[in-house]
Length: 461
Image 1 (tube, rainbow, N blue to C red):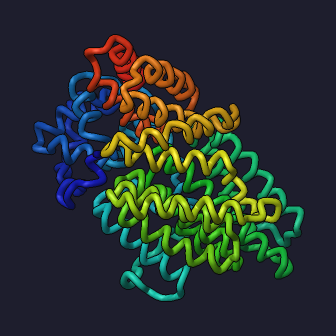
Image 2 (cartoon, one colour):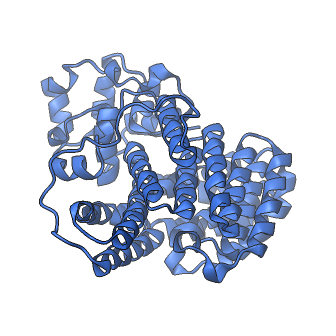
């Protein structure tokens, strides 16, 4: 489990790093040359544990251990995540940072929120989500703001529907890039588009235009949140999703509220916090029911099933999968809102396979349900859904290994690696960890050993 997910509050406290640590000559040299292994070793000399480093940077303890042993960190998005998590001024590492854009669009940078315990952040977001969805502070008073609200550049004087359609078209194009190449490929472009789109809120327009603008910008913030999540920038993701909720509520769009809550719930599933994820999915169900969209209800049921599976509640997981399939069959796909149309029959198979994969890791009997569902999903995803296809290939390979079919599992695992190598996504790497663990456990088999070695090389790249 990722140390940032299940660790204690103490492990998250960035003040474990002495205030003058970054100013010492040896540390400044290591930072300037981006020698992260040297940075981590110096932090260990300052009494900062591997667990604390993992919690602050959002890495697993095994990743921190590999870096301490000399593994190089080359990816720009990982370097920025490490800098922000540890509270290192980006300039010390030669990392570009457009502060004005970041403050205006995202609010506080991820590193500025690093001292706050992750469980506290989750609770704050749950409180905010409850207020938006139900109009009441269900989980306690929400405190603070999500963005700093600095001065903005002059907005256009007046906007019309054509301006809003341009935002919508840009969002569709950027979302397609995210699906195919990963959030790391397009997140900066999404944030830049938001910087321009936010100015339109200051412009004059008819009520119809302004209402559609709220929804369009909510969807763009949701995409910014999703691409931030995909690149490991969890605090930025949370801020964007909070803004998306507010704008979707202002635009009186219940399906989009449900979609944003579903996406933030997925962030918490990824952080191994299924209890908090389930609360968000349940709030999303309220919005989905208000919208009258069976497809939105189907999406939320499938993800609730995933949360229950992670919690070890097999009965509820299987029950909700059944309801998800029933709601999908009742849904009018032709009239579904655009932000829920992504959930096709292929995605139903993908969710069935994903939930049974989680259950199979505790009870291998579930591989008989997971394998056929995942196989159908893999066969149906095309190159435009490369990231989703990679997730499914990885899960399918894991199930074959669990089922004892090591030769076929290794072949499918190799295909997963081939797909993953073309995608800029931290999430892909994280989702492939179970496959790596199962391959490592079977090193006495030549096929499994070859797969484990390929995965090791993939993570080291």
